[in-house]
Amino acid sequence: MQRPLTFKLIVDYFLYLLVRLVDEAFNALPERAALATARFFGRVAFVVLPDRREAALENLTIAFGKEQSRQWIYRTAIRSFEHLGMLAVEFFRIRRWTHDEMARRIIIDGARSFNLAMLPGNHGICLLNSHFGCFEVSAATTKFLGIRLNLIQTGMKNSFVSRYFFTRAGEDTGIKAHPHKGVVKTLLQCLHDGEMVAFLADQRGDAERGIFVDFFGTKAPANEVFARLAIESGARVLPLRTYRRDDGNYQSVFENEIRIEPTGDRQHDLTAVSQQFHDLFERWLRMHPEQGFWVHRKWRRKGSHRRAKGRVPNRGTEETSRFAPQAEAGEAER
Image 1 (cartoon, one colour):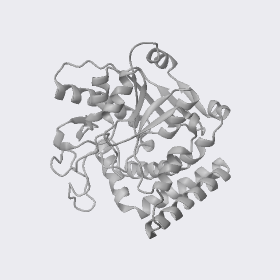
Image 2 (cartoon, rainbow, N blue to C red; image 1 turned 45 degrees about the vertical axis):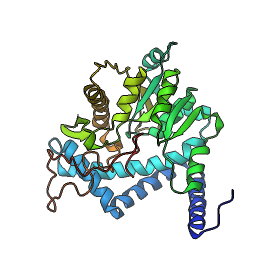
Image 3 (cartoon, rainbow, N blue to C red; image 1 turned 90 degrees about the vertical axis):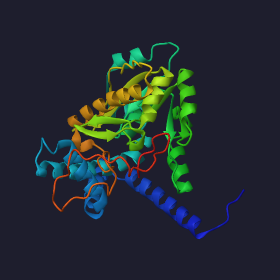
Image 4 (cartoon, rainbow, N blue to C red; image 1 turned 180 degrees about the vertical axis):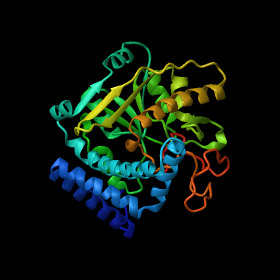
């Protein structure tokens, strides 16, 4: 059925054409120039997006305020915005990488962990990732290795852009995307059938559900969905992190399988497994803090903590009533 022509539809289509133009522009530029442009726009975003800048500085202060100086936190926040700019460029460019280019650009470690997890058996695999490093290149790594997997797809309000983003990689990626609403039962069935499911498990949860983890020494609400998938499916949990190297290439590391040992106490198990995940994510961020996704408030929402101008946030503050309900599949705050 053809949609009626409206002003919003016209604007959405115009924005879609703009995205296509940006895509072509970033791919036409030499990579060094494209990434330099991305870093510049990242610095611009640091200046013109005060809310995101404040979130990054607050998060970094909570995480590293007792260990690092204010100058280090400020510099790391700027570098993290540059990293986000480069992520945007990579999003457009890596989908045009050939198999040979992937072989040249992606250095893969952890073959033993990968091989053990992929051993034949009646089990699924949870491919555990987070908003750290180059998670788009992690997707390219799975394509390069010929892995077929399932992931959660959060649609965009602009249907033209959403369709373009989620179909432009082609049909040969081996990736099956599922809408984020009401997806848990579907993904559990995929895991029970021995398939692989990938997810970014560092997304903040609903504090009212009471799943809190220790993250950089401060309590943070964790989204229980990812722990639930691992526990109820009986799947193997294989962590994958990908980060940008100084030489311009990418390191994809399959880490040791995370062992899940449920006790039967649902609340305890959800908290314990979520803590296992976040211990891993904290270790990754300590390796390369500038490649962290610090612009989302992990510990508390905007307005949950009033600060005098220039004061360091109180690391012990917990907000337990002002967190809006989160999507079932752990949709990240935008």
